[in-house]
Image (cartoon, rainbow, N blue to C red; front, top):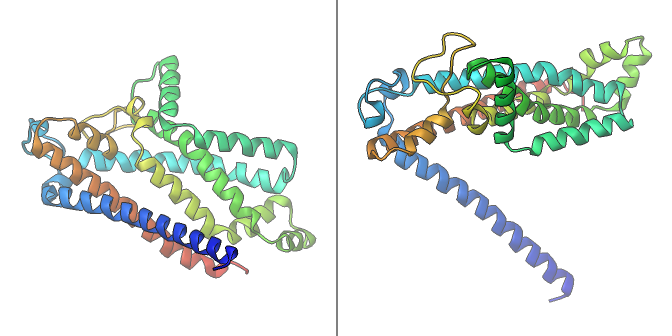
Length: 282
């Protein structure tokens, strides 16, 4: 066997091994969650908030955590999107290939790599400075900061793929840069932009560290932006920490609900992205 063929065989074996390892880990994780969580999952858990003695194994559910997670992740993603889209368009349309754009991308990459607990600590310090208690609003703002670099960099890379000929044609027809950005660039990159937003949403709904100090935790449904809000990751964390087997089984059920939510969002995003691609010029 020649050296080149031997190198190719080794590389192929390593790639297959890595693929099997990743898929095997995924199957093992999902299998464990389903096996441990499905027996404890029932309608009561999905439709009720914790009652007295819930953490001792008595009646109640995780409706507070489900609703709180959607409020936190949904609000944080929406706020991050409102801020991220103008930034991404500015980097590509107005500041393309400039030093300040490269510095901004570097800063966003650094922010992307910062652990979520750091965002939580930062948000907590700011909340103390302004006299705000742990609340839904505090959690939303912190998650928006956490998701901001994910959405901006995802949009930035997506806009890069838009052919320059389309932009030049739009400008040649008399459109301004802003009109080109809104009517051409966004329309062409809609599927990729949607993917970036849902990727950030998945990160937000599954994060525990950033909302531990900023959103707090409560057994009630949030009734205002200034009231505490529960979340599924924290529900899993708190229930796994109890000495009662029945409550720990409920933690796996909560993890299963969170996994199903993320999976459903992924499937919906693929369906929507497929519909949006019909407007894309290839």
